[in-house]
Image (tube, rainbow, N blue to C red; front, side, top):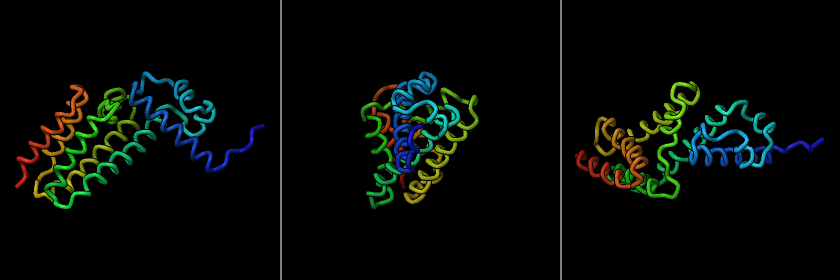
Length: 186
């Protein structure tokens, strides 16, 4: 009988599993990656994986939720380094441009998940909508502080830049969206 797993080891295993699943899902797509591939990449037995995540869908939701926290946290850390509200809003698009130009950029993980699973998974759809609402709210704080109202045009530029950069394989949409937002500034 195997020794019981400590809380620390369980946390490390869960983080490793989420890391492996996130990388595989983002790089290859959710539907293209089977649980055996997640098992191989994480080094955990399927029984252990299914103890933490009863279904692949549960794993996808956990991956998206954790990625959301990190993604929005990284964005906020970058943007809040800038003191002036107008420059802070423009920094959103500078950050997006750096993300788009980074190695392995394959577009927005939430848009990708929606594109693959759409309305077939209520829990994934909920997580996608949650992320987009939180990003919209975050963006709204910066647009309001910069004197731009409403947030929707800025949000649409950010979302459109994500899709266009992924399809076109270029960070240029971030610069173009930044210029459009700059033209909106009072």
